Length: 418
Image (cartoon, rainbow, N blue to C red; front, side, top):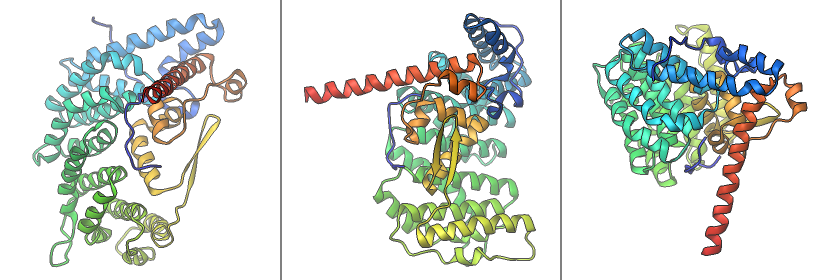
């Protein structure tokens, strides 16, 4: 997968509305929005005539969530944010969201500024999902331009809720990947992350600092986001990063936090993948057989497994590939760059990742999958997809294919004029 960043592709009062449940988000059951299951059943029985009604009902529910994000009750706002998060994680809602993106952005901004821990966490996650829905382009750039200063203020504020800071550390990374349009601003954001995770680096005398678990998680999240942005750095940027951080990153492999140790190892492997001409990090070899008695058996087993893969990647340039199947397609996770990118998106869309791989034009563009594939009747029956769900998927696929053809025609015109 190339490191260069692709641009310009997209992916009243209401009665009380109930947030989607966890079950609603289960893509494995091929129910992209189970709060809609009754309408889906009706659509199957009554034919295509019910699809418009089901869509109207769903949009009515979404409008109710948007209205409820400004409710006086913190519980109601939290429920509304969670409802919008689940909807965006499990459906392609580009047109609906595009028309209301600034209203949703205003709500996210208000919740980040005035809300408490859980509400701020939900708002930060919703910001990422909003950018994923809008894709890389002017719309997501506008959203991010509004929210980035707030994200950074929370991130650097030592008195802010630690869970909110952890969430922002994760969301800021992916939002930057999707929506940042200035390479210097990407560098500035990476420096914000560096200012956090480098506090876990060993001291000048070689000793490791004592860090509480919550702060360690913040540093780990910052390192993960920093690693994600490494994937879009230029060769010259990578040379400077290697010079500055490679001598110190291996010390994170001695952290008391198993998650930090694993993320540090994967980040080092990612760096080597991006810069093959650097000497291997010998510390990885020792960690592959680490058997310190004070570490839990599960931690040691998990760490050894990860570091064997990391060491193999560093020494031989190999990667333990994984195949992701979605619908009638499959995708290979065959590099540390692709793994870090895939994991970053899955962090937010969760079990909806397979659906987004099938139907989200922007995510398909990131992973070079081409335009979404239309689902025919035979495939629908084999996959046990309802008529209504097929309609939603094919509608998104058709629109994406139309946009792709339009872009191609535009390029031909540009070439001709040139």
